[in-house]
Length: 109
Image (cartoon, rainbow, N blue to C red; front, side, top):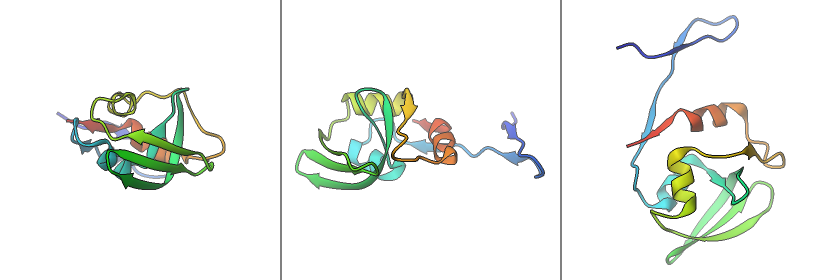
């Protein structure tokens, strides 16, 4: 079985590397690695800082939004991260295209 091959103009073909994360890992660990957070409206934000406070996480995004969420394996954020659901990327956070492609190619096992 061969891996999909992507072509970039003017460069040789490269194999797409799959990234794996544990499916039901703690939310804090997943957010630390991926550095992206989907809001309730479906906007994908870039994470600047994560502070763990007991059962909660304080998240500061690149656009300046401060959010406190519960560190849960079955929360909405965890489910959206596992399924890679989002509507759009935040224009203020300015998430690069390569990071969105990397997020969409990540597999959870």
